[in-house]
Length: 260
Ligand code: NAD
Image 1 (cartoon, rainbow, N blue to C red):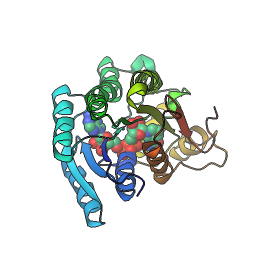
Image 2: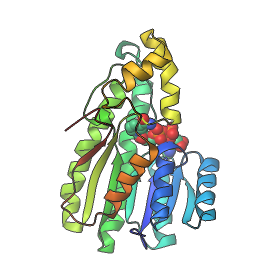
Image 3: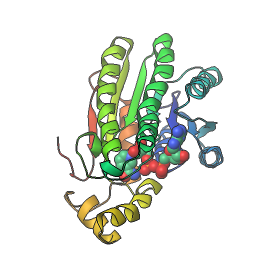
Image 4: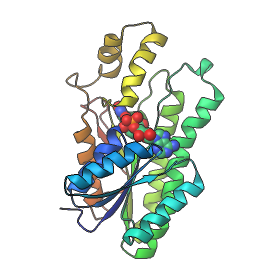
């Protein structure tokens, strides 16, 4: 119950990594706001957490929409008395070679990954500062916050950008006890990854098995996917680490794919 009495909002929490983070933070005692574009799925996750004895509510939020983000965070604060943890996790993947990457896809990627991180941070830190208790801001980066892969111009650019944002939030938030860090997973089997295996196979002209073995897991120490639990446990650790000693960092969880 390391997070007892804490209020955590997780974006993109209706599926995959965000869902597992919401479940883990609730299991550690936090009241969790399961925020997502997909309200029916977010509601199922929140109801499931409640059935297992945790505290959670679902919230419809498009992280690219300033009004929706501000309203969702204001609603969280008025309902639960504050916000202690923000996990900015919502994300998508669009793969293509740069010469074929449409400008509209590029803008969509920047909007979800970077505008979403900026808008949720801006709305949440105000309350963290005002409470006098500080808080934890955790961004879902990627090994692609440090490494590049072909076909992922927008994703790699956006995930690198999160490192810069986290470092600024760490500096500005430090005097208020607000810590900002980036969790950087390797490949995790979620709908986001399952969708891109056939897409990459098509663009690269190789089989789906080759995409997994020779593209996704090639540089890991053991040929293994990173698990949802590996990522959620790291997020929970950062959420509960209540000192500025650990801020402005990125924690890579990738079976050794990237070593810093
Ligand atoms: P996922 O597709 O399983 O879940 C993403 C969730 O984000 C979905 O529920 C979706 O509805 C939600 N979402 C999308 N656009 C949104 C918006 N505008 N506003 C609010 N919610 C929105 O994907 P995932 O694999 O769990 O990815 C979650 C995060 O982890 C992403 O930021 C992704 O880049 C990052 N990540 C994933 C992997 C991986 O291998 N799966 C690796 C590294 C980083």
